[in-house]
Length: 537
Ligand SMILES: [Zn+2]
Image (cartoon, rainbow, N blue to C red; front, side):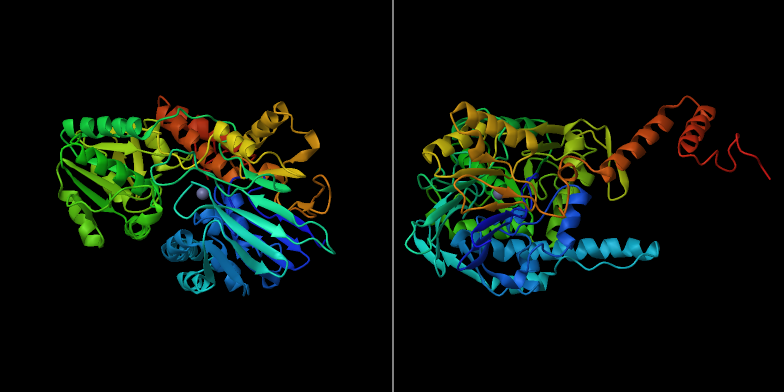
């Protein structure tokens, strides 16, 4: 098809953003993100691309988050030789984020291969290495916001502020018409910010594109509107309560944006005397490097002065500096990654502090089901960290006032500001309920049913048509049910936990033997050897 759009990710799921645009002048990708979530979804990252990487002539990148950029090193390793166009903010963030991602791939596969050797299975290769990531950075070309950039013959692009994270953009693509026809425009929203952020201007965009590809992450949710002062007051109250308890406050953080927002808010609270000048330790090399990128881009941020330079802000860079934080007995804040406590240095701090009633943990973002962060949020009395069982006696608190995404109302307002579309609107980057909710809202606002489409993974839309016309991929890489919610790995873990709980709460060993015999019977395996019900030789 000479002019078509194929949805290779973020269709039926939130992650793995990747759209292939075929035009008469050549093929390009918009984003090349990693799939995240269940093992079934993540397995897609290991498979070959569903297109020929050497035939792609350029990539346009909306922003640096790994679910939008994380497969770029794999793309270049697979033979892609074009340019990757991104804003300066995005390019600077990628310099740290992609090598960090490569390092994570290498160490995860190392751990997996150790288990594979024990089980007699073949070793697997990492999706890509740190070296692949560094090589892919050479293909980056920095673009300015608001200016047209020539990408291919007959194809140009313009980046608009999206207000989501540093460097984030919505991308408008214009494709020249054949033989004197009017050019066609396609607007990719990328991830849109909530508006009213401390660092970024609100999302913008051109009016009336022919085609619109819209993210719908929070399409079914509205959040309470909190201005900067109200948000800082909430943080102040939490920090004060933690200090009053006489201990140390641990804040698990996401390295990009959340860390910097917290530092900014703390800087304000210190400056205005709302908090005493306690020490704040940032214990994450990636968060530290990303904060450095923010400092280089202070001119682009909507702030005055440098909120990241304070004498009571300290950076723990080496492992020994990190370990030294264990000796702090109170009156300090430790910020460490990751934000959901499933990896990184924060796990050491939690292991060291969760059992102390005077210490506090403040969760400041979304905690995915099954992560250590969500277990703490649900009030688990004990948790396992690095194979050890730790009693939870620290104060566990949550505030949900930092968000990088537009909620339902903000998404609809952004669409309304585009003044409609010439031909059609594709809803992507959202769970099914979120996409359905936005479609319903658009219907109520007078949008024609056939103008709004929810593409499935690898679907192709014919952009020469007057209304969206979709051709489904055959065979599909993953059927829609496999993309949603939990997979059998999650349910297996759940089943093991239920069995463990049933055994723990059984009144005596006879009852435990009965439970196990029932499980064996259900598996059709009969009673196991050596149990009272079994026959002894
Ligand atoms: Zn994002």
